[in-house]
Image (cartoon, rainbow, N blue to C red; front, side, top):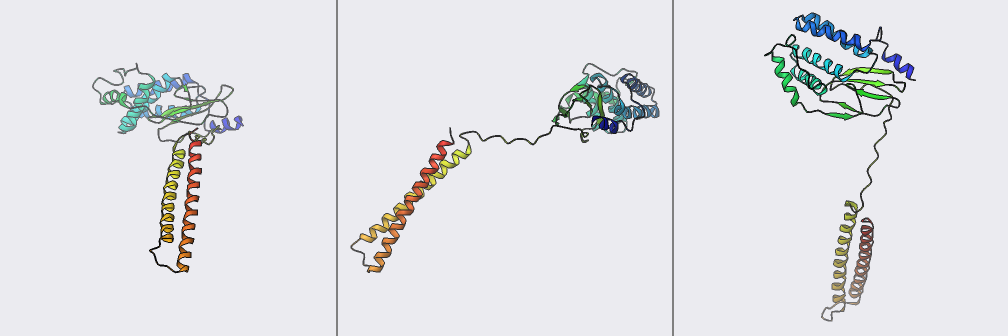
Length: 270
């Protein structure tokens, strides 16, 4: 299965690119930018970004930082300050001590202000599923959290320690497909003594109140049945007796239900 997967990934590559060769391409882009050779810089960056998908090894954090800062320059030249800022932030997070040589960005250059501002961009990550074989690497560091505040060089290394996939992902780009161990999240069990138990106690109280009210109505009906001052024929008295008996039975049933709800509520707290 891995063989087919690797073939699909590298199908667009005419040759596998060693990391040293890749870095040489980044150097050409840096020299072109320093010489104000816009066409040369764009051509070198086009080649480098294509080569990310054909590289033969894990990109070290130092090299990933280099990719991000050159991409930042490219976005800056295209007047896309939002992406330039994010790329600069990625570079500074990976290689905090590095600074621009004046041969590339003279002092006072507007891009330097954006570079300084990049330290204020907060990092953000999102969890991704673990691969069924091998490990994921983001900007040269193994992990299962993909950066989302800025772009990343995402790579998949197989169980045989060979690089399987290498992709430059913008923050809003989808993660590349890979065999994963993704499982549906299991619901957390309800802690004992939480809201369900409270609900049973509330229900028990309500049923007890209803029972008391029903019993009161039964007592009132019984008083009318036995009151000698109330004139009523035999049929009316029989009807009152039936009403009284019904209310007494209902009161007893509600009281029993209240007791059951109370027992369930108590059990739920242990």
